[in-house]
Structure formats: structure tokens, C-alpha cells
View 1 (cartoon, rainbow, N blue to C red):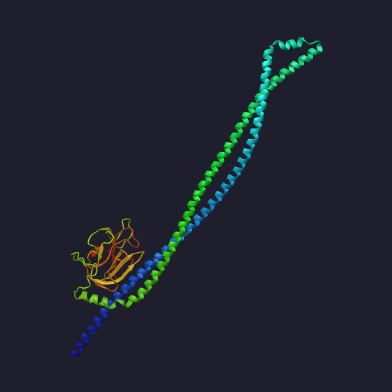
View 2: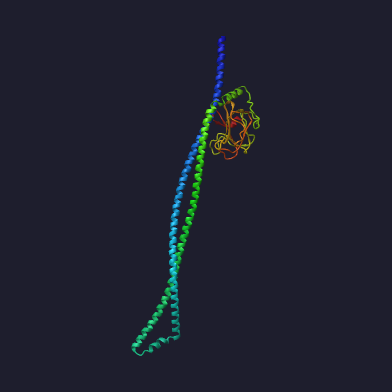
Length: 407
């Protein structure tokens, strides 16, 4: 019986050691899973950035085509303007020639008007008897007929001269009107073409600026993709290192929890804050309203709660734990800290002020110990603290739980 008892005690000891080892392995595996989730998130961002790059490139191609089309239209309008300039030049020459003819016609008109006026004066001074006297002075029938013919020709010439003068005057006025109308029409057409050309030049300039901006956006997205690739490679390295890095610490943390002990971490690092709550976790900030819950107002999933606090607000550990991860990113979570707690909980504190983290990876921290300051880093639209709680296996998609259930 004594031997059987010894065997049972030995089996219990071995089982206890195996159980503790499994707990530590599970904790380390959770860190590995968390890092893999972070890598998956970066890969998703790479995919989205690649799609953004393709969209920008497509938009740039379309805009370049529009610029080319505008250039063709501008060339067409400029060619039309050149044609109109040529027509205006020809018309100006025609106008000069016509004005010279009009000037000569006006001189002829003036001379004939003076001749007519003289004839009218002479006729008036001679009186109505002048033609009769001329006929009666005929010495024979032949002279009479000849004189009558001459009188008739003079009267006819006077009438034709009067009609000619009137016709010339009308033609001169009509020619002036037509030339001025043609000149005005061409000037208007040229002005319209010039205006359209100017509008097209403006549109082309705007499109050129848009192409330049798209080129700059394309460059930035390509740089962003390269940054994400670099970050992904670094996380792969972190996964390999983390498999063994915190095994002993996680084991010790769980043992302390089983024994009802506190971690006794270095609370002097960055100050302390105790909320006075009795929950598993305390609030990570002393003030600030919750501005977003697990679901955004538009119905999309958030997976955390946000505290609306000014940049620089102290952020505290929600419970005793071991710092698993710290980072200062320009995307995603920005400046953030991940703490592993006993009992399988993991907390994330994101969008902090760059360079404000006052703890380090592998450090044991106490509940209420300051770990960083809030900010607006990473993918953030304003100063706040993003606070997540995750449970095993700690993946991003379905292991984030409502932190308010633990306060």
C-alpha cells in the first residue's frame, strides 16, 4: 500500500508539472497567435493598399487620356483661330480696297452731284421758256428736229445722272454695311474660339495638376506598401522569437494568480492610478467619455471601446500582467501596447502619442501602472484611446470581447 501511495503522489506531481507547462505553452502560443493576427492585418492592409494603387493608376491613366483629348481639342481650336485670323487679314485687305473704291465713288458722286446742281441752277435761271426759245430759233425743219433731239437727250441725261447718283449712293452705303457686318462676324467668331481655347487651356492645366497629384499619391501608396512588407517581415521574426521568450514569466504569472498573489511590478514607472473598482479589469484612463463601443453608429464592427481624451492623457494597465508587445507605427494601431494577463485575458491600448510608451516588452506591470500617453497616431481620426480585450486564441476576427464586461 505504501508503494501505491508513493506512485499516486508521483503521478500527481508529474500531472501538475505537465499542467503548468501546458498553461505556459498556451500563453506563449497566444502571443504567437496574436503576432500572426497582426501579420494578417498587415497583409490585409497590403492587399488594400495594392488595390488603392491600382485604382490610382487607373484614374491616372484615364486623366492622362483626358489631357491628351484636351490637347487635341486645343490644337483644333488654335488651328481654327489661325484660319479665322487669315480670313480677318484677307477681309481687312478687302475692306481697305473697298474703302479706296468707296472713296473714289464718293468723289465721283460729289462731282456728279455738283454737275447736277449746276444743271439745276442753270435750268432754274433760264426758266421754262429756254427750251421753247431754242426750238423757235431753228432755221429749218431739219434744225428743229435736230434741236428737239438735243433737248430730249439733255433731259434724258439729266434724269439718268440723277438716278446714277442715287444708285451709287445706295451701293456705297450697302457696301459699307456688308463689310462692317463681315468684319464683326469674324471678330465675334475669333473671340468665341479664343474663349473656348482659353477654357480648354485652363481645363488642361487642371488635369495636368491632377495627373501630378495622382503620380504623387501613387508614389506614397507604393512607399506605404513597402513599409507594410517590411513590417510583415519583422512580425515573422517576432513570432519566431516570441515562442520561447516569455514562457517562464507567463508560467510565474499564472502561478501567482492561482496563489492569490499580486504581481508586485515596478509601479514607479510612469505613475499609478487605482479606479477603486472590483472588476477583473479597471478602466485604463481616469477620465473621458466612451465615444465608440464594440459597434460603430453606422453598424460596422469596431471590436473595442474608445475613450475621448486629449492627447497626452496618461494610460494605465487594466490589470497585473506582462508586456507582450510595444510598437510605434505610422499606420494601423499607431503607438500601442499589448499586455498579457493571468487567466487568459489580453488587453490592447492603441493610438498613443508617439514615443510616450514607458514600459518595455517582457516587463511585469501592476494594475494601475502608467504604460503610455494617449494620442492620435496610426489610423486615427482624432485624439482618443482605443482599448481592446481579447481572449484565447486571441485572433483579430472573433476573439475581441466587450471590455465593459470586465470592469
